[in-house]
Image 1 (cartoon, rainbow, N blue to C red):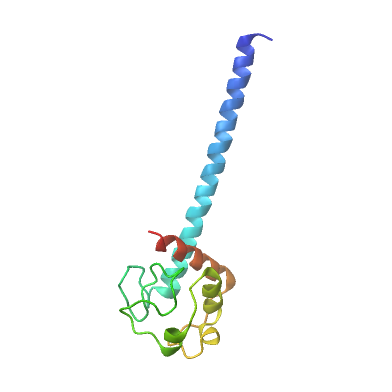
Image 2 (image 1 turned 90 degrees about the vertical axis):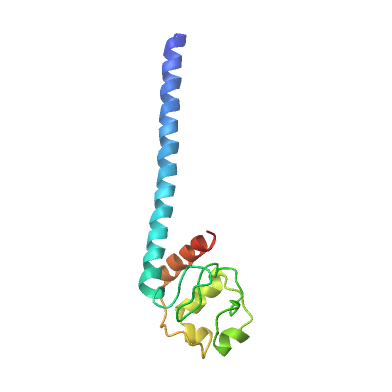
Length: 135
């Protein structure tokens, strides 16, 4: 086998490897984009009527910007219900998941008029809130 043949074979292998890496990277990026779109759709359909994603902009409920990792009832310029004011919890993905399953069961007496989300919708929404809260 000549050096030219080896170079062609190696060049072809490198091109195939680069294409595979590019395709898998695009797939991961595409999946992330699709997950964000699903979470955004859940937010728009279920949350946007009462909550904003803009810092400091409250509607019937507090802004959800940066909610993941925030103490419950901690936004200074929003008047929370007593159960949320007294709750000693941090909004982690796990606590949000439990809350969004059935808010009144998780924190009885909360003013949030919401009956809960199915598991897929909860996870999509929580992932979305984590992403948009970092911006």
